[in-house]
Image (cartoon, rainbow, N blue to C red; front, side, top):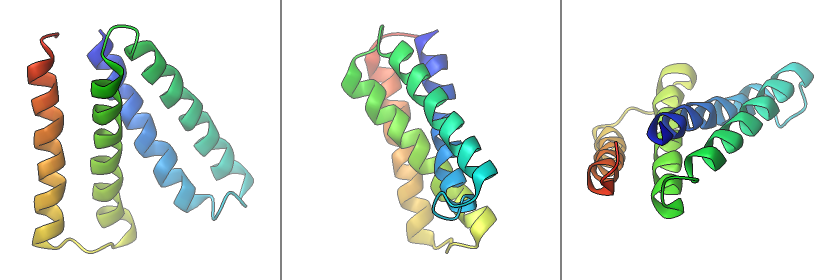
Length: 107
């Protein structure tokens, strides 16, 4: 269950990171509110996950999901460059996330 909480926490991390772009430096009230709510949910879920997972592993996976999701959505939503090198390194982060899950010894 803690891995699922961590995964959802990572998705909410993506939401608040993308929300920063839409909030225009936290100057637009509705996107700012959505960003803040996503941030709180992400932190609460991360806190629940670290009750059973090592904090270093959980944090690395949480930030990895956030980085992969935010970089990927940056390409799709904001026309950020989708170079071969960039995609390779995003994939490398995914490999790291999967590797941490595999060596953690918990489902």
